[in-house]
Image (cartoon, rainbow, N blue to C red):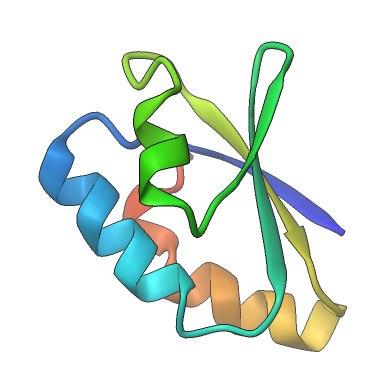
Length: 78
């Protein structure tokens, strides 16, 4: 499992994030405080506080997670 901090601070960012992440068969969790939701759920994402960074847990092997990280680069907080 790989964990990164992401920012989804606009409606357009949330929509494009979900479109990108649903292309992968892997499981993704978003963690905000004590809430954990499926990162492929647009309704679930809108239930989180999007003004703060969100933790993304990627449940994938190392080789696959590198491909995923390159696609998700615009959302990752460096």
